[in-house]
Image 1 (cartoon, rainbow, N blue to C red):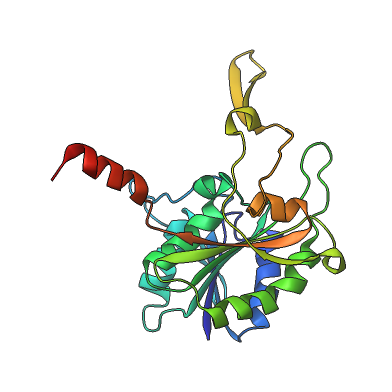
Image 2 (cartoon, rainbow, N blue to C red; image 1 turned 180 degrees about the vertical axis):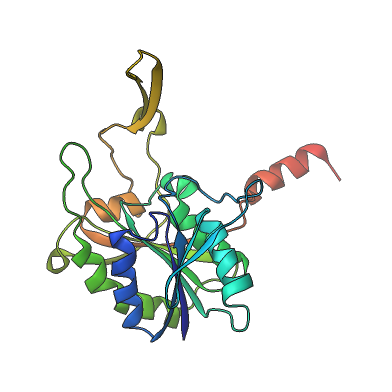
Length: 256
């Protein structure tokens, strides 16, 4: 099995090294094509107005001066054009990608691009604690549980026209309670994001987008609830964004 690895945290991210260890338990044919720099939050964007620079870091390890989507395209259309990957694994992201994170995440977007190209694709993220002195991420959680989990997902089959979004809880591997298949949750985005004004050395203001900690009451069956309860969350995601129920209502309103 030929596996393509990518991420949005960049070619030197610790989570990518963890992902390589995971992938090598599944195959010895592993390729890494990741962004040259951190591309967190770029979602499913393409570099249409800038050239893409490709740097070979080592054998089958490449850095691309672009987005995670660019990386998947560069890998499939250029570097691996003689034989496409059988699987795309994106991550392991430093931080969870649940609820509305899915719409912002470059990690999930890379898996989306793999799915658009007809390749089974899985996004993997490790929940952690941020703010103040940065806590060490429990990478052993993802590294321990991911290989068997990926095998089970592949045996069950990644849905055509979609991908699977996997999130590991913020706890050591032995303390994980199990796996839950979930739906995408929802949080109060308006209260989670704030804009902080600062000033540079000349007194000129600049701004940071920042997350704030807020209390969330997760609904049962969601990815947010699974992580809060100590479970690995496995969420199938469709690329078709059509609201079919609303389409039926609008069709009735506009008539034949």
